[in-house]
Picture 1 (cartoon, rainbow, N blue to C red):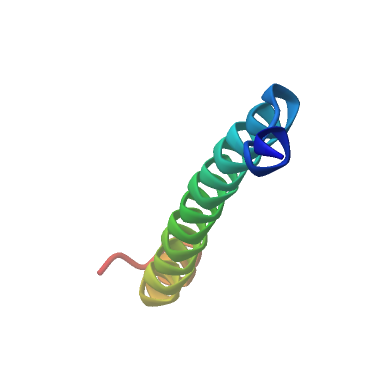
Picture 2 (cartoon, rainbow, N blue to C red; picture 1 turned 30 degrees about the horizontal axis):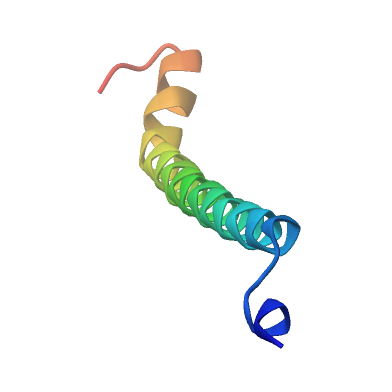
Length: 62
């Protein structure tokens, strides 16, 4: 009866692996969110430079 209440070594190993996998997935999601925000900021910042780039290619300097 006691054996059924305690998790076996294999079950415990699976629980630990599942917890580590969940932590790794959370870290990857955090890195992905940071990369998405960084890319958005780079894209938006280029919009303001667009006029400056066009003027420079036409020989005008601001």
